Image 1: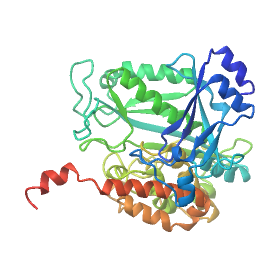
Image 2: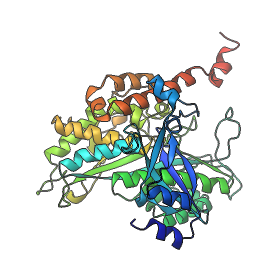
Image 3: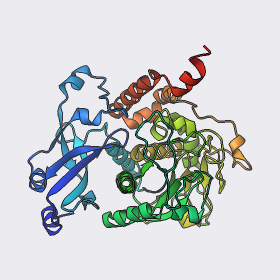
Image 4: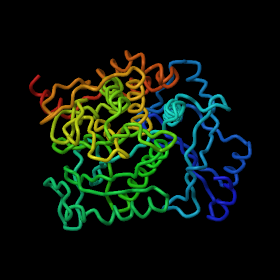
Length: 446
């Protein structure tokens, strides 16, 4: 956008929310008067303390490996990305814009997820390639859960009942959530978020939306804004929406499946040859996913709860096998012509920070092409039964993540140490909690 001032005047904008996604994909930032926002664009800095972006899932400040930096809590300068400036869909007179945070003041801070994804995309750009991605996002519509000691349950819908049975692709079940989903679609359309198909997934109250394929950064921006729009719309209807990986004991987990392809400067798909066959680069890309996705699991399964979903069952593969159109594989190659040749990474959870999940997928594929890793033979049959090579818990995942030097080299020390600090603090907090299961089964038996 070349004329932010003109756009703000034409749209009657009084306030601007300047938003920065943190390590967990949570939007942090400030609400600014429009005049102050415009002054920031003209050279008067907009500041945000570094601590705002070093926050754990439980809201605690994670600190920093550098004690002096942590307690000094220096300011970062916000650098709004005007391509993301858009009117808020439900608040007349207010706009939203995503920003990078700079530290030092003239350089985007390399520890931030959005900045990391840009650096990974630059690796591909240097080779004349551009990644194309399409996320599929699953989530649950639930009743409000004011007391977290109680289980999450489905809401009472228009038929006066709670959905209990599974209804995969059920149209009547989907219609029960039509009022909230219609509001979400309308607001996303106002914001230029191109939602594609909507379906009822396996779980009770579980839905899925597909986003149209496009630029990785733009799609990540759309995912974080979609989550915000969806949650607000659900609250207005007396419901909640959760992107937690495994919110209910007896229901399917929620994924963020990522379809990925590469195109060259002429727009040709790098993964398919002139004869329509898979190229060696496609084989190497999948080989990289097979080797390095298990080492980058904290980026695609970022919470202790995430590992309750990544277990072999009907709705979540726990392997890095690949196959043509076989959803029991962690890496699926959908049926498509050469121009749409792609791989679907089915392992990321809906709880993942999209910038990090896509960055991890692209890093793994990049290393596969750099190291010329051949993919293993195509799997067949019921691959849910395959022996998993994935870490089974957050501690295991962090150990493997720490030990993977090729991935660490691409992530850079600032990002790696900052991310690790956040996740270690979250794990420590979780380990200090006595769970309901322990109280139920051990209080009178231990």
